[in-house]
Image (cartoon, rainbow, N blue to C red):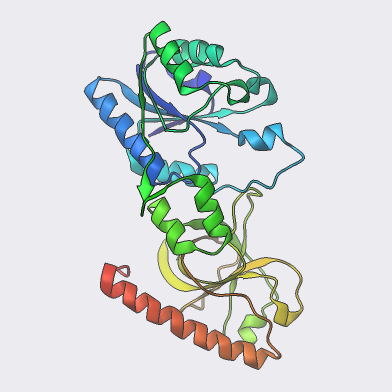
Length: 318
């Protein structure tokens, strides 16, 4: 998959089968659209192209409101899209000036003339152009006017629920990690850097790696304790991760810290990836460090029981 950081970088001699959108999460619904686009590109001797915009339009158009958190960083999105088999990924800068582009100009000038779009694939709720004024009916009219084919993909369901990025964000914000993972088609993940913490965990035999997330728009699941899969220095581990303010330590700073099972290396300043498997409890305040340590032993046991069951079913340790 080739990545471009502007529409202007895209080669002028490629006939594109194109879809566009934020594709936040690259979830099961998105993947169906991408699969269909690849099929069309193969049958029509074209090349599959996904056009997205960054920053997210809402972050640009409503600068006073940055509450919208996203399922993927751009780097995470690229890695997930690479699995889809699409040939080209265009990340075009979204600005206020760009947002004023009328839908007909967007289709004619950018998609048809610059990207040589011959076939367009869109999701069931797709809108485009200034103020999202472009509807599917308008797209049909424009496809006839500018001679490109158009296909609309119906909503994709998971357990009779239509999959959407919004629903996945809500699930993660409520701690429903397993259901969110089912909608995504993969484990929700975060990428960060290991930074120095207060090192209290070492004193109770539960050392932790404190994780710094540099992307301000990355969605962090709700506070609590999670069973996680950890990737450090090209190796995979399992552990338990706490998100919250560590009330037992009277620490008001919100943090993410993971205790990695059977691991004791110094990993400060290392890149770390964590995949969320299951939320096991709320964050709690304990009367003493001894009480906290007792609970952590229970948590560790519960995590390992869960991992043993998953291992038997899916061979996740392979």
